[in-house]
Amino acid sequence: MEKTITIYLNENKTTWTFIKKEDIIFREEFTDKCKMNYCGRYNTSWTCPPAIGDIELIKERCLRYQKAILFSMIFPLEDPYDVEGMDLGRRQIMQITYGLYDLTKKAQMQADFLAAGSCSICDKCTYPSQPCRFPEKAMISMEALGIDVAVLARKSGIKYYNGVNTVTYFAMIFYDGE
Image (cartoon, rainbow, N blue to C red; front, side):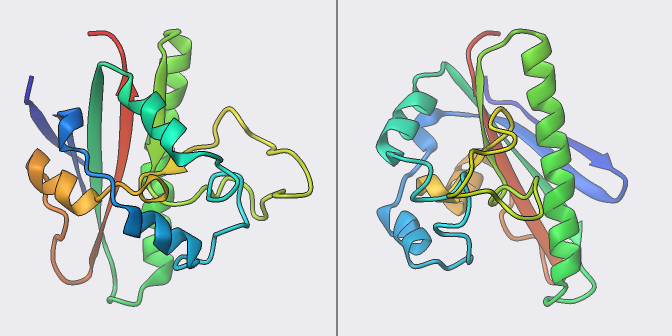
């Protein structure tokens, strides 16, 4: 089952690998960082705590699937403070993630996706005053569930850190089937 695929989309290295669910480590200290608002999105988005609800139930739902794929994309940055480059990279991996989401829906395939970071479909989230505008595409981040992405990447044979002036984003798909 262990198979890793690496492709290049433009200059961006993309790596896909099947993962063992037992390699997914959940750390409470990561969800605590959400509560401390490390990324600035706590209590501001439908895809972040506390709006996502019971994290344990979401973890259980994901782990019920038979299979999982972890994928990453490496993006070059002008310098370590290139926030625009980081945002562009995250938006690009999310374009691919949403494309995969659309394919699973067309194939009537049950799957759950975990995103690279907090949702950014809308310029301003409607949370908490109005319902989500795109609930079918709302994806929770791996970190919001407390997944130790660095450990998962290492166990899966994907580099987490890819050098100075790069950023690497990860996303995950849980699914049943072949």
